[in-house]
Amino acid sequence: MNRRKAFPARSAQQGAVLVEAMIAILIFSMGILAIVGLQAAMIKNTGDSKYRADASYIAQQRIGLMWSDPGNLATYLENNTNISDLLPGGLRTTAQSGVQYTVTVTWQQPGEAQHNYTTIATISGG
Image 1 (cartoon, rainbow, N blue to C red):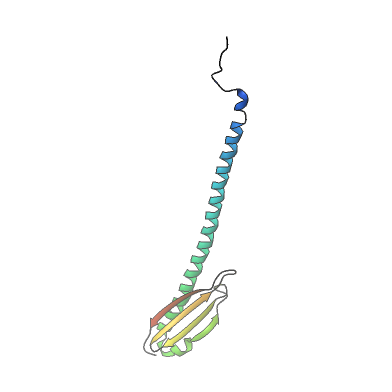
Image 2 (tube, rainbow, N blue to C red):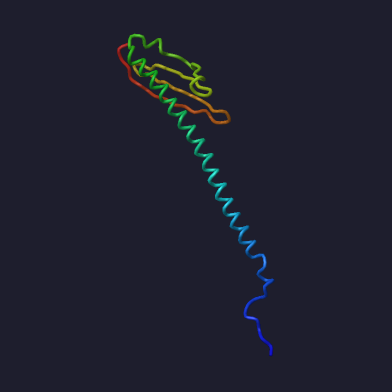
C-alpha cells in the first residue's frame, strides 16, 4: 500500500515562523522610525511658531509704545536694530510713510532661511 501524505513534509515549513517574526520586526521598526520623524518635525514646527509669536509680540510692543507717545514718533524710527537677544539673528526696522508706520522684524535660525514679520499701523498726532 502506497499512502500519500496529506500534509507537506515538516522540513518544508521550517523557518516560516522566523521569517514571519523578522517581517513583523521590520514593520514595527518602520512604524517607530515614522513616529520619531513626526516627533522631530513637531519640535521644529513648535520652535518656528514660538519665533513667529515672539516676532509678533516685539512688533506689537513697538507699535504700542508709539501709540502711547504720539508726540515723539520720530524717536521710534529705526533701521535694522539688533534684537538678537530676543530672536536668533533678529533685526527690527521701524519706518514711516505719512501717518502709517511699518514695523518689520526679521530673524534667522542657523541653517534656515530668513523669516519676516511685518505690521502696519496708522498713528496720527505726531
